[in-house]
Image 1 (cartoon, helix red, strand yellow):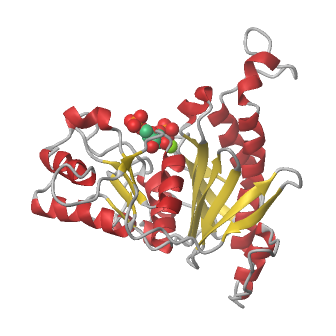
Image 2: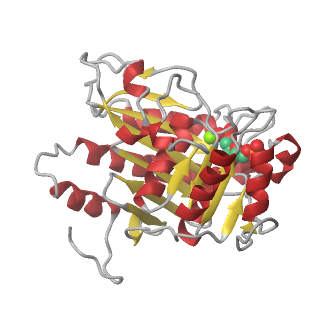
Length: 340
Ligand code: AHM
Ligand code: MG
């Protein structure tokens, strides 16, 4: 791998090519998927940036200046990703958090050997109040024999991911991805429209600074969960108290903890016995990234990446971030199993 100094300007495209050269047998298809995702991210960033203007630019009744019916941004983002990928010849199927079933490649287009799963705009309920949102994606190699991708190709355990990443639309737009060779971050320079390498080989601090959890659900947590959160806050035992930071937008909470150290927790509660976050679209891709950065992701007892999925939209409790904080969750649930 070419070593980049702090002053060298490296575009995402150049970085992906350099990583690909480490594998003489690589066909370039996976690299193509990553470029296409970077392009889709730039297009979504452009829409998100003008989100607050939608009402001003659109006429009453939801028709905008181009005579198009205004659509919600998560629907638009979903369309952008499908259109960026369905004709490229690199995928044989997709699945989106916004759609109920498998998304087949339209007839007439070439099929590739990969499948893509994505959450087009996570945290989109936050858009109206100008809070960061993000796109999350996950790529697997097809395992069935036919040309078309099947459900079996989409329902693979997270440890089989060949690439995963997210794009955060925050004060700047950033893309973080892994292909199993470390986790790397790129910041969009809006003046030239390029993602530039800004965070090579991200390492999450071993211990946390931040705790991200929705404490509004405390009344619905079981006893081990209440005990765990008390430990994180330094109210019980000798854990240094973590600072509570909860945006309520997973990509934003995860990204802060990845860079600064911390744990994001979405435990089971009596109203949502499996938590809220989706295994395939949210937990698995972020788990791949956090492990590449030296952290951990668990549902409290199992490694997230080892869970065998049974349905596209299944949920999983999630504890993700700095190694020692996630290990603490596993220790607490090992001593007293979850009872929700
Ligand atoms: P969404 O996929 O419908 O946007 O929901 C996922 C979001 C995450 O970004 C965030 O971590 C979580 O929901 C917050 O949930 P809650 O409001 O229950 O704390
Ligand atoms: Mg989501």
